[in-house]
Each structure stands twice: as structure tokens, then as C-alpha cells.
Image (cartoon, rainbow, N blue to C red; front, side):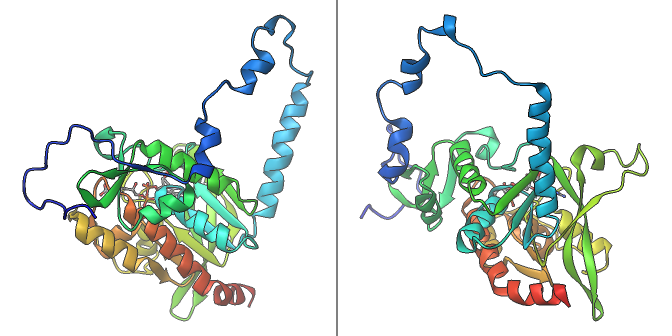
Length: 329
Ligand code: 48N
């Protein structure tokens, strides 16, 4: 057991900052195994006779169009919609899709590139810090990480993109998950529920359309019905905290708590523990929750995002059957 982490002393000068790398061998050996790629054996030095199989442009168009419209038709009635494919939304999708392969899960991501703020650590640096016990999530995914010398309280993924690309590849591999990126949630589908509302789906449009409602009229949206919506749209950016802000503008909640200043210890525990269904049919997690509840921000540490995703998935599993019943009534 390494000595307790030095508190409030100047950090010991460590020359070798590379700690022990933890990773399950099965997952990465083929990816980073030594030796020549088979591709070089197959194609190397034979470029004169290289030729692609023939194709007609319309075949490409139909292959893309048919699949996209089948997905739109199939996911028009989804079981769960996740709004925002950042670290929390993707972590939620991973846990939920694995636990319930029978559920149709649609992920709506406004940006062309999913991943939200998790492609880099703090101040555009590469390394991503996750405090224990969030290393359990990395171990399950097979993301290699480094132990921090003399400090067992957190682990470091050498590049945030290694975490996000691994998580994204695991989520997209699930047959019951569909990612609609470059697609914005621009409103919520609601049903009267006594003197409040129940959220019963999302209103969507191409993000480029959403960005131009002010200078082009009559670009009506599309819809996706679902008994459970999980919103993880983050705390800033052009669309940040979208569903939280919509609940206020619909008078479903009175006002936002507003994200507070940076306090890693306070922020991460609060966001994980309070990830919940904030109004019937709508679960909010990740940094969007700091806007609803007025929690602190944590800055460049991501453990709360993945663990909030685990909690959001559990919340969805807890309420799904009842919300599904209400949706059909
Ligand atoms: O990464 P984010 O912004 O949000 P989270 O909650 O998954 O992760 C937050 C995390 O990156 C931090 O902010 C770190 C921990 N820093 C904290 C701090 O104190 O600074 O992902 C949200 C995603 C983005 O990809 C957006 O493009 C997307 O949600 N999004 C939407 N997608 C569809 N429709 C919308 N209306 C929408 N709004 C945002």
C-alpha cells in the first residue's frame, strides 16, 4: 500500500510521471501488438494492380438513405432518448444498453462530433483525471490508465481522446443504440400530468436548421416519442443545459439553481448522488444538473460524469416500466 497522499505539502518532485498502466490484456494486445500489419503484406508493393470494386454513385446514395430513413422510422418510437453525447450521456448509454439490450435507445447529439467536453483534459491538456472509484468504469471498458505515483486517490488516462473514443466505440457497437449526431433537441414533448407535465419525447431538427430559425422561417421540427428522456447537455456552450432551461421557460420549475464556483470535492459527490428524475419522464445528469441544483463545478476531473451516467442508467431502469405504462394510457 503506498504511503498516504501528501496533503498540503509541495508535491514531491517526480521524475518519472508514468505510473503503472492498468489494462485488461485481452482488450489491447491485438490493437497494440507488435509485428507487421497484415495490410502491408496484402497491399504493400502491389499498387500497380490495385483497383477498387466498381460502384455507381446512386448505390452509395441509396445505401446511406435507406439506412438513415429506416433508423428514423424505427426510433420514432424509442424507449429511452439520451440528449447529449458527452461523457455523461455516453456513459449512461453504455450502462443502459448493456443492462437492457431489449430497449431502443436513441442518442441525440447537436454536434457533428459526439464526445462533448471529454476530448481533452483541463486547459486543452491531453491527460484526463478520474478520481477513484471511477477507475472501475475504465476497467470495465478496458481503457488503459496510469496510477499517480504516491497518490492512490485518482488515476490518469494518458489522453482524454483514448477514453472518449473507446467509450464511443463501445456504445456505437450496441445493436439497440442509434446515435443521431448533428441533430438538435429543440423542445420537449409534454403531456398534462395533474398540475404539472410529464415529458414524453423530444422535438428535433438538424442542428444547422436550429441555428437558423432566426433568419429562415417555417423550418418545422420532427419528433421522437419515448417514456424516458435522459438529458446530459452539459453546463455551457451554445446549447448547454438545454432541458433544464426549457423546464424553466415552460414554468415546470421556477428557476435554475445556477452552477456555482469550482470545488472538486463538493461538486463530484453532489452531482453523482443527485442525478435523478427531476420531473416525470425526464432524468438529468452530468454538468446539466449543476445548473438545475446550483452545485459547484469540478473543473478538469471526469469521474463524476461517468458515475452520474451509471446513476442515470439506474434511475431510468427504476422508472421505465411505470413511465411506459403512463405513455400508453
Ligand atoms: O461534455 P458535455 O458538455 O456535458 P457532460 O455533462 O457530459 O460532461 C461535462 C464535462 O465535459 C465537463 O464539463 C467537465 C467535467 N468540466 C466541468 C467544469 O467544471 O468545467 O456534453 C454535452 C453534450 C455536447 O456534446 C453538446 O453538443 C450536446 O450535449 N448538447 C445537445 N445535443 C442535442 N440537443 C441539445 N439541445 C444539446 N445541447 C447540448
